[in-house]
Image (cartoon, rainbow, N blue to C red; front, top):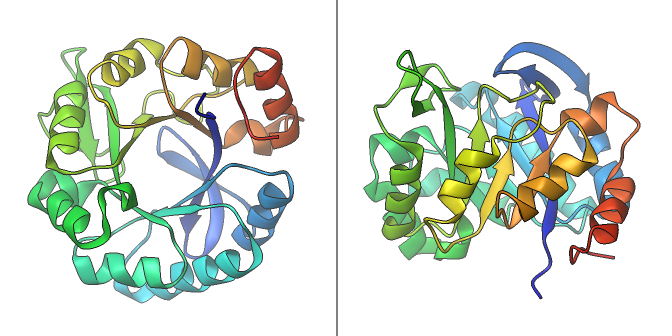
Length: 252
């Protein structure tokens, strides 16, 4: 049986680790390098870094952090934020990332997914899909940290991303992000039932049972979380233990 993955998410802003609610209300929650070492010591399966201020002048923060974490930690790293061409992806991978996550650039130029897959392999390419309810009450993919509507249906876009060469999907419900009310299991299940590549659920974890539900009910291959590890007494150790008790195959 394939092991399910538990993946903490670290959001970066100007080199600092932050937490948001629905992609706004930024709160500084610490030094990303220090937090990454804690997650590594607790045997997290992977780590996701998303740089929300990935402009040219701030890119060095990301490179420095990724290089340091890659040297000190042993878990795979997925890194995203402002990656728009093969050269930027190569730089991220050269500094120690194992996978690159793309979002806005993939929507604006879908062929970019194929370019990265051909250059670095499908398993290196994670297409990050952020979605929320639009004015009509329908799920819609949004880019630019949840501010730009695209007109895309998240299920259809996930299927297209797989067709173009994505090796994984990182699925985030903007409406639930940071709210600690649980994953959007209905949409999650729709997408995991529509693609054959791994899907990582993100956005909304408030209890360790939510992690189990994301896999058992939502069909995710991996579950990502942040707030629960920052603002409650839960830890990677406790989460892994609970998941194992519920019959899931997790890393020991």
